[in-house]
Image (cartoon, rainbow over all chains, first blue to last red; front, side, top):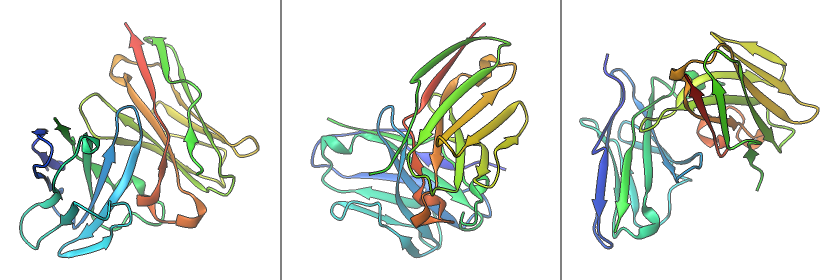
Length: 118
Length: 116
């Protein structure tokens, strides 16, 4: 059973370009979470999605960032008009159900996409 | 805001020794804590969790201790192995997001280096 897959693993963009980060959850998982990690810091929640629905985007910047999880295909985190401050590692996690009720052990993280904005 | 902090940013141990990684949290009302391991170039991996109604919880070679009096959390790794080398994060679930693990507050991380 393949784990959570993210691609690309490394992405370099120039300021003003668009970045598209993809996440394929584990088989059978319908809940996807996106996090951002700055160097030597912990993860910061961005958005939580189920198939075709954004459930919680309270951690996502109001502008330039968007996310989707279509019925078919991977979840996409899209950053428009990237700036240097967007440089970070972006992690996706998936779960078979919402990890409430103290079930952190059911959330599996992907290897991350390291975005560098020149 | 309230956050979780770590006493030691780096920890170096000899293979076979026991490791203790410490974490201080500031919200006395937090009632759920998690330790994650993150190896270089990989995503975080769940290690062990503990609820505030417990003082200690054991897993395979790992033990988490919770001292609510001083708001302190520790992760003990027995017989540390080279494969344990990683950054370890503690995370807390603040009461305003009880039961909502996506709102965890993550600490800064402690780098554990195991010397052969």
